Image 1 (tube, helix red, strand yellow):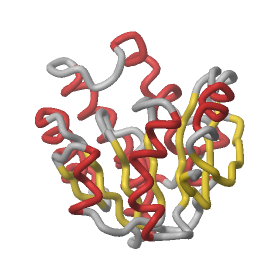
Image 2 (tube, helix red, strand yellow):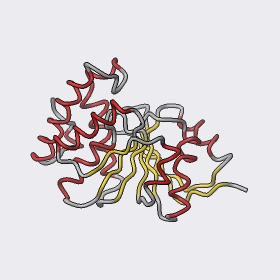
Image 3 (tube, one colour):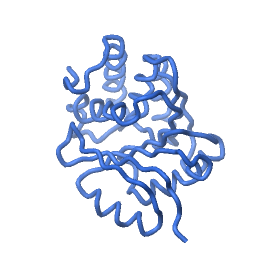
Length: 206
């Protein structure tokens, strides 16, 4: 299995990602980590899609990944940070089985991160600071911004990175009814109908 040329990585990172992919396939036979119909496209649909975030946030940062599930983009980000030797990912996942998988993935790949088996609504009480909030296939944008709001209130420079599908504009319009924010839309290099939303300066209206 090979990552697309545009998203090429070092040999060491390739080996870490390969180990993650092997572990993912093993655990997927026991628990539902992603939609079963997408497992065969693990590298292009999930890993390469997650790797795109390094083109948006290039420097090592402190990430909080919400609803980490099967490890996208949280584990992939943690693997990339291992190459830098700096930065950190706090992965928030309330499902105990998925949390166990994520811990094993960090252990096996040497990814820079930790797993927190918490409900997202409770995470801000434990994880106080972040530079970046990420989430993929978790909730609509309005709800994601509600989740991210406590960290945005503490850090005016917080950036939020969310993968979205073809209905992203409707989600943006809905979210702007509750929040004001700066937005950059990045076209996905992996899926034609998908984008990555980069959000900053989040403020609740009214």
